[in-house]
Figure 1 (cartoon, one colour):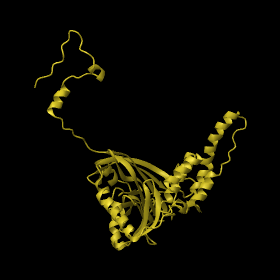
Figure 2: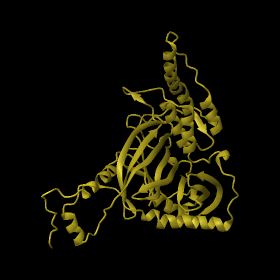
Figure 3: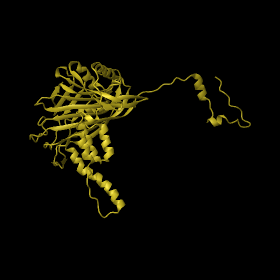
Figure 4: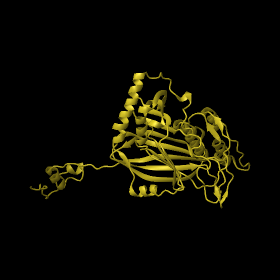
Length: 412
C-alpha cells in the first residue's frame, strides 16, 4: 500500500511568505530573455573585458534574476523539455537554473501551456476504454514483472524554514531552500522494491524532524489509483506530446469511501493522522503501448486538518535493463504543508507560526539488471579449448619451423 509518511519538523518559527507574482510560461521566458545589465571594469583591455563580461553576466543573473524567479508562481506547468530549452537558449547561471527547477517542481500539478499541446481530436469512448485497459495490462503484466535490478535513488529535500546563523534567524522570505540531499541504493526483486537491512534501519529510526518521506513509484501508487477508480470517476482531458508519441491524459477522482491511498502524520512520536483521504489528479498513458508516463495525485483535506496540500507526481521514461528498454520511474515529487501550530516546534516557545511547506524531489538513475548467464559447453569444445591454438590468424598461416614436429592432438 502506498504510504506518504509526514513527519513534523522541530524548526524555528516561520515568517510570512512574500506575495508571489503569477505568470505564464511565455511571460517567464520573456523575463529570461531580458538582458541583465552588468557594468564591467572599465580599465581592462578589450579581450579581458569580453571574458569578464561573460562571467559578470552569469553572476548578474544569479544575483538579480534568481531572486526574481523565486518570487514567481506559474499558472501553467513548466515541462522538463521547456526547462532544458530555456537553459540551453539563455545560458543561465547555476543559481537561476536551480530557481527554475524549483519553479517547475511547484507547477507540476498544473497543465502545460495550450501552445505545447498537440492539436488532436479527443478519442471516442471505445478508444478511451481501450487506452485505460492497456494501462491496467501494462501495470500488472509489465511494470509488476520487471527483471530484477538495482538503481540509485537520490532525494533532495526542500522547505521554507528560516536559515539560521549562530542561532539567529536570517531575514526570512518564506521561499523554499534545500535542506539536504541523500542517495541510497534500491533493489527491485520478484516484482517489488526491496529495502536492504541498512536502509530499513535508517527508515525505521527516522527522527521526528526528518521531514517528508514517500514511496510507491515502482507500481504500488499507480496500482492503487487504477484499482480505486472502480469506485471513482475517470474522464479524458487532453493529449500531450512525449518522446514516444502522443499521451492521453485523463482526470480522475476517488472518494474517501473507496480510497486506499494512505497518509500518516506524526509529531514528537505521536500519531496525529492515519487515514485514507479522498483524492484526485491526472494520469498520462502512452496511447500506443499503454505505459503510464506520468501520474499526479492530490489528496483532499478539510479546514482544521494539521496537514494540507498533500500531493505527489511520478514521471516514467525508458531505461535500459540488460539488452532491453523498459519504462521505469525517472523522477518523483512529494509535497506537503504542515499548518500553523500543527506540531509544536520546540518546547521553549509556543509562539504561533506560519505553515511549513515541504517538497521532496527524487530522481532514479544508474539502473543495472541483476542476474547471471550460463553456457553449456560440450566435451569436444572443452578438449579444443585445452589444446594450444595459434596466437593469431596470421600465425595459423605460417609454416612449421624447420626441424620441428607438428603439434600432436591430445588423445582422449
